[in-house]
Image (cartoon, rainbow, N blue to C red):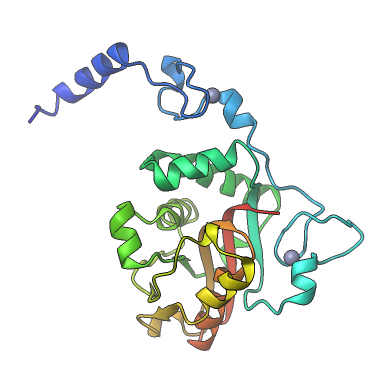
Length: 245
Ligand SMILES: [Zn+2]
Ligand SMILES: [Zn+2]
């Protein structure tokens, strides 16, 4: 509709008529911040996940003398490790809600940069992984939402670390109700046999990094890791934007 040269002009005009505001506090963003969707003070209030945390799933430890969290002590998770960048507190919770249900896909940049910061700070050996996969949505859910929020994060991280990313290997075959509204026990039941692998050849003997937005009980990531290992993967770890305590 518009000539290519007219687009920057139009964007500039739109910024004057409708100045961009912070998604969280609604304060107007300065021209230098207009590429961001959240103002610097809201950004700084996102709580990073920091030690002491569980050496398997990076859940914050209530008793720092222990190596593993309560969850990892009593569950036999199929994943090798989970690396979680942020705590699932405010304003992360509100931001994640906007990202998943508000069609605000630009928020992926905020989460991906926090994940990169976590990896670099804690020297997570991401280069040991040859393949990045995202936790899949059921096709019906993906059609409703229009995108898979974990896939967008996975693509950002794969681009940053130059690790191959594939979005056609894992399939979610079970359409489960909103996981946020079900009990932890029900959640475990729902994810069992919820996934299948479309193509086995490229996962054989491969170290895989699974990307997801949030880890809660670990049921989904464990189930997927089990499926990938049964399909021939050597090591499966997960990287999430946040962890719910
Ligand atoms: Zn703000
Ligand atoms: Zn743990």
